[in-house]
Length: 483
Image 1 (cartoon, rainbow, N blue to C red):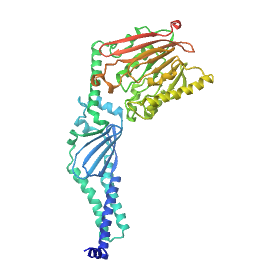
Image 2 (cartoon, rainbow, N blue to C red; image 1 turned 135 degrees about the vertical axis):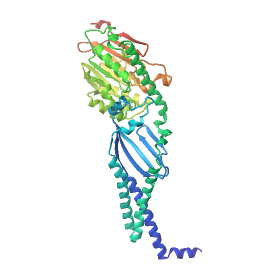
Image 3 (cartoon, rainbow, N blue to C red; image 1 turned 90 degrees about the horizontal axis):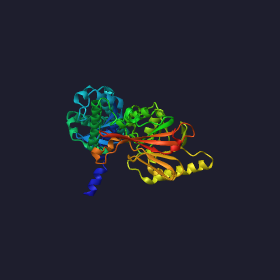
Image 4 (cartoon, one colour; image 1 turned 45 degrees about the horizontal axis):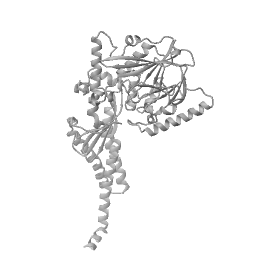
């Protein structure tokens, strides 16, 4: 039996047929791979720029990739084909215009009629790349592989035909059985697995914002309890003849907090804003499109990156004219500000490891000690994002500003004023949804002497409790410096 099998395999005819079959199989595989590489292209739909691709797969699904959040997928068709749609960029300005035009329903979903009216760019080229270009690439790859085996014309034709027919048939089956309704029950992976909770958080906060604005209008423009308008704050008695600085932190793309910051800056006529980080939520590039509408560039602003910041958000702030403080000393408005960038802001972490944060503070303090020994003047302010960075500087500098915790605090330790101005918002942390204790919108106004060197006189700590009250607490630091 074994010898008979050896004789058959040794036959020139059998070897010839085996090589024919091998050539066809390899040519078809090469064609399928070439089709997958070529069958993709860009498409612009409304405010989104997409990359669409088709590839063979063991499971028929459509997968929408939303980096860095995760994926949404559904079994939208039959056949061994995977359709991938990757969201490369979203124009937030266009998206906002869609919302204002009524394209989004109250539930947060895109209206079907609005979807059909969205402008689309690049569809003809996409169709050509996927159908024409993909099949052409498959044919050429199969042809090259088949010719490499030096097979007969019939074998070459069969290989090329199969290389075209197999992906073509798979795409045709997918198109014939396409059912977008499958996305009514999608599979969520990555951070999007938490999407239902996030939707509740965002929709609850947006509903509260609308409620606050409605009540403000009903009360004939008295915004004191909601956005702390200038009439309310100025009644606290801003100290005349002083140099005033606004300290804000942890805005997290909150539009109410942004409005509050503008209102405080106007009412107190501040000359400088110091922001100790976490303007974005995730630090991803798509968020940076919203910065221009949130940042008041009419007042000089310095920014110390926090753990939610990233190189993309830092670069965007610099383009807006914001002075980003990463390390070392800078003089702004007669104030010497020493900053320590949060080490996590070079990447991203929601719950930072305290060890690298404390190490970064110790390293920065060692640098400051060298500068002070060389005769450099002690900084007026040390600005950090995380209060864990304060410890080395206590007793050395007069004032340390921080954020991160979202809870405002004030203390004086060994002659150093420690001020955490809390938060100006942060949609993902809404207490109504998360069960946390309600935190107010909070910020601080710092009074310095008009002349230089500037010395800290007092601090107004402002807290806005939506639907309840606005409080202004004055902390007097040095009564002898009062103008």
